[in-house]
Image (tube, rainbow, N blue to C red; front, side, top):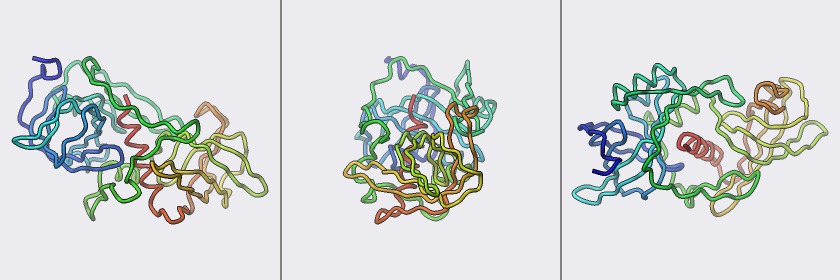
Length: 291
């Protein structure tokens, strides 16, 4: 028996939100174990791809558990589906909550949960990393150069992203909106404030604000600040300008580098309305699925 199937699987028919890149695919698990699961999909996912799953019943929880996994098997008949291997589990909840989920739902034993602090925020993330032995390699994300982030997959702008229907918003969307979480971005930008224009780096980006790395000092609650950057799509770069308010000033003691905590007042996306929200969801997927 190969290594990925050594853990005993049991029947487990639960609906899950499945994320592949910026796309959300709703699917159903058929069996589960401490090392992985099999779930039915409308289309077979690529081998070696990293995905993120959230059980639908868990998604409404105040602090849902996100399960990152890698596709290790594809099946076309008698029903289309994929077998996945868990890589890590994360939650904004307590280590005890994550331990309970791992032991009671997945049957994991010998659990060691780590806690990591968001670089520019006060939130702590509880993380459990599954053993990596035997994992297939994952395709490398396309790099677009220093300060340009990562490109979104082809077709995102044309609407390949699965939009949540009323009352059925996905777990990533809900968590971002509820907590104001920000994901690592690494984007170069230009900041305009009063008579000054400076180059800055967006280290973390969210749906309602950002943290920019800069030595420029501005008073708290100052409004009218404009930050312009490009969202890297597969086919083109989209210019986005955010008008912001200063909500925090970091001298480097919190994040390790001096910078400004900015809250969005308005967002100008030109003809690509909604692209910032989609890009933020993509960044959060990358942060959740990266080992």
